[in-house]
Length: 393
Image 1 (cartoon, rainbow, N blue to C red):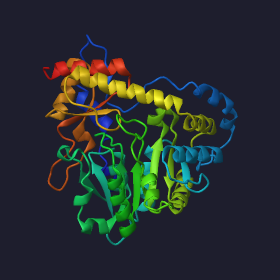
Image 2 (image 1 turned 180 degrees about the horizontal axis):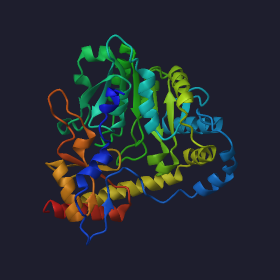
Image 3 (image 1 turned 180 degrees about the vertical axis):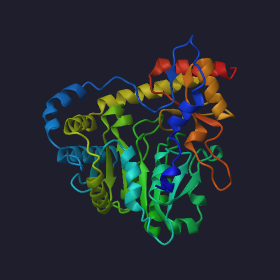
């Protein structure tokens, strides 16, 4: 059976990384540090076990795909606490997500009409979280990468997108804080995208999974900017967020989708068929997590101190505005990843695996590596020291 859309996917970045390193042995004199995946490995928040225990009887029931009313209200309450000036209805403007990967992927299949006379366009930042690209391909769209280059502070060049492309656009992914670069969208960035979405009738999806991990100021949110523009119903706007990063609970597989009530209803219909429901006991844990800020503040402090420890040990550079990644210029990113693994027992991700070639033949991720500071302050400092030695510092 011919499946050209699936064939375009290629291997996922971590499968490519495993293949890149498969013939190598990490330095046996050093314990391996896995800084490749953005998987927080901090202590569990203290409420997790109790909340799970209280909800164990939920394993005997099918969970609602939309999320329980209590979970959706807890999410709405958090959004309204976090972002000033917005009103969110848990009943019709919020969906629970089974993590956000599935939501970010599936939304393209709700937004794209593969039977259109002309294939619609999906705009995505480049480099990017690769789910956006996979979603565009499999939904039958044409991905249009928007370069995010170092000379522009890694801001995606939204203003350089030709008007002819905007007219064909059905979906835009924006990631703030950015995975992998740490760029953070400004009010003006979001205002531009909202105006374009309304003008050209496309869906704007903001991936804000790193919103609670920042080095300086708390990032502004898409819904917050929309409300400030008088766009209180969030038409054409959806935001995704997750407890994976905010609460260091990647194994919980719990997140949110919020915004435009019409799009929420349409997406809920699709998801009722695909069935990505979080088990009810885990929804109880999620409710507790969205209601608690103490563990979030503690984790934020760890990430900030980890960034300080890395750059102090590495000896140059400074943290990005958002996220817990170091986006480091290294020259040949694949060769550097191999050397880091072989010589310094460090596993990190080549930036070229997170980008795609644009029309100019350039992959903006090439020449960089992504380093995830997910194991605490001491490990971050050790990472900086090992990589400093690798580059001869």
